[in-house]
Length: 315
Image 1 (tube, helix red, strand yellow):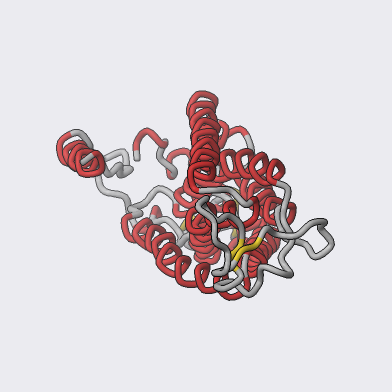
Image 2 (cartoon, one colour):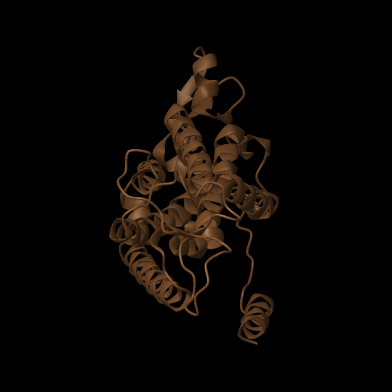
């Protein structure tokens, strides 16, 4: 009922309260802008990395959402009431941290004052650190609590079922306090930072133009990750245990962080790419195009740039 009510409320807000306005610059005589004011194409590779980052973020979160509770029950030998209490507390703490970060971002415009690229790389690296410190390394001390079908007791059986999971023996337990503390801090803060920075940078890379199709693909990238993640994660967890899923997540994070570092100079807002105008054809060009046309490339004056790029309040 709560979900249905929220959806109905959102539909009403979109239909009756939101108004789309398309700002278009006109010449002094009131005519529509000519071809020389047509915006250059946005950086498609940078946009593709945003798609990949969105999919990777959802895949990372799906791991905790899908096997977080079974992982805690097996790794820490917790019964059902206890693991529900612990996971509920962890999720409440995550939401509290996320709420504070969202409020601070809206209040102080954090994404405008600090580099979105830095936020993204650091946040993904922190997720990688979370998986590394909670990985079931072979050198860790102790063994998992195990049981099998021959275990007869009126109390609830806790630990790893050796009849269904062949990886119970070689898997080493992780420190419970280390897991929950890092989980709360990293997920609560880094997921929120990535959600803010990647979404904001995605919009800025496209520039002041209609973004309906691009945002549709952006959401589709995240949705496809949620579609694939349950199949991959559940299969790996059943066959290889936490080490299998943790290894996959570390591999994905490593690829994403590497691509962000490689494409660091390209992950910038659209207006930062528009810095010059071609004197031969009087069309606005990107900085990359200007380098190829040294004979006629001229710096784009600051007032011209402001005229070309509408303010955010106008979009």
